[in-house]
Image 1: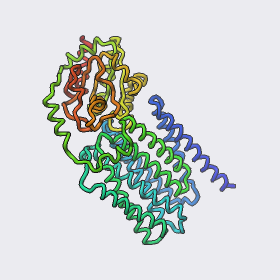
Image 2: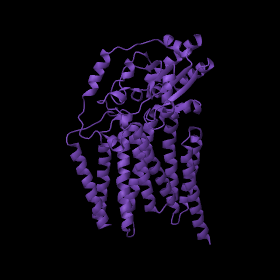
Image 3: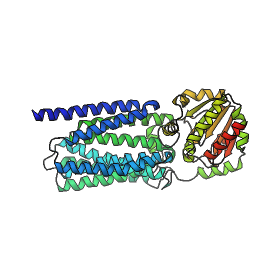
Length: 471
């Protein structure tokens, strides 16, 4: 009787946990419920962990080790998660995602090498797949982290015969994987599985190296999806239903997000991941910089910029990565409130790939308690720029560049952008004339309707607030 109740408790716990995962994911689709969604999903995960500790065959020593590991992991992760700046949130996401991939790969290898019984061929296949996908996700996430953290160049990194090298590595992974599945267990198979592990780490790094920093939001979504798939595969290895459901949800949602992000850039996922293969480094970036120096721009002071803002009827604020760097989200909200007191209609235009990860700007502005009903996605607000008195661009670059519509040689050609150039007056806040993550100059900066307010965004907005109040 006890065994029946024991099994029923674990099954029911996993079912409730799965429901929590689904509800939490659903709530994440709306900024107003996103915080609660995280809490519901976290509660489901806590329940799943507790239920796992009561599984059959779980020895006291193992439970103690698991609890110790949970405490250590919580301490290591909680502090940086609370202290990390919003500008570095994409890097943290990449690291956490990479840790998930590494865990799956290591668990898969451990299941194979530590098995005290003969494994079925289906389990061996899942072990091989978990090792490959988890390793690729880990190594790719580390490269993404280094690019975002500027520990290495954010530009596409290519070298001669890159396609050949990658092809050979893929061939090696395939050959060793087939050999492991055919031979099953044994010392030779263990050595070959370790070879799969090492080559998968290598290919994970090599695949992400050629991808430019502007494509990192899509890369993060892809790697997140891979980690979810790998976790689901590990769930089959361990016969853990909660892990299967959680992994499947992450894999499916990550895949869907990847497609949406690619569409927002008017590119296919394969083009994002493999578009740089065979490319030649250098070239256009330097020329763009020279051209930017030769073309005229109009620089203004905060006092001058405050006049059209103070007497406007409609203002659209376009946040970008520069806003996050300056940590100016709270100051921007204060400016919007000051304008609203003067009867100005203020809204925010959010591009799907603004920032360094999906939803970066939404999270940033939510942190500053900007009302959710003032945030508008690109498709919902783009037509309104033509009826807008002032478009205030804060640190956004590639997502406002008109070259995406007109310049067939531009790397962002065809990418849907915010129609900022349709506004009556355009004010751009930037530190300088540096190019965005795509490495090209922004044609918007040379538009006759555009005025550049140079300096730290937070300081510039603070001066704007003072000037608008005095206007």
